[in-house]
Every structure is written in C-alpha cells, then in structure tokens.
Image 1: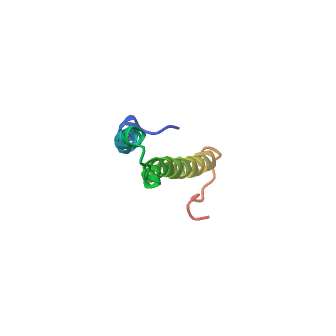
Image 2 (image 1 turned 135 degrees about the vertical axis):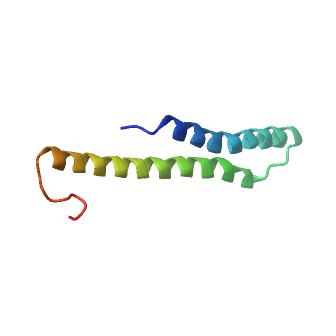
Image 3 (image 1 turned 120 degrees about the vertical axis):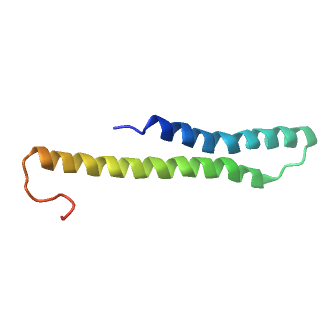
Amino acid sequence: MQLHEMVVVFVGFIVLGPMGLFVQLILQSMETGQWDFRIFALPAAALGLLAIMGFAFAFESRRAVRELTALLDGEVTSARSQ
C-alpha cells in the first residue's frame, strides 16, 4: 500500500513552501548575525505533519490488511463490528 501520487504532491507543496521560507530566514540570519530561534518552528511543524501522516497511514494500512485477511479467510462477520 502506498499514498496516492496526488497526495504526495500536495504534501510536498505543503512541506516545501515553509521550508523555502525557512531557508530564506536562515540565510538572512547568517547575513545579519541576528538569530531568532522561533524560525525553527517552521521545520518542526513540517516534520510534525509528516510524522502524523506517516502514523495515520501506517495505522489505516494495517487495519485494511486485517480486514482483507479476514475477508479472504472467509469470515462472515464484519471486521469493523469487532
């Protein structure tokens, strides 16, 4: 199982947009010598988003595999009702 290509592209835009801003802020901070550590919230948020999506996808794919296994094993009861 894998994410749909459009989802990957959409998440790429969501992650790469703030990361571009982060790179610009880092370069500006290096030029001026004035550091504002709040800019590190941008990559932290992007990594958090990716982690949440990865966890949710892993959970849903395991559930789908369990339900498919139950279906292929010929169980009559619904896997969702358990």
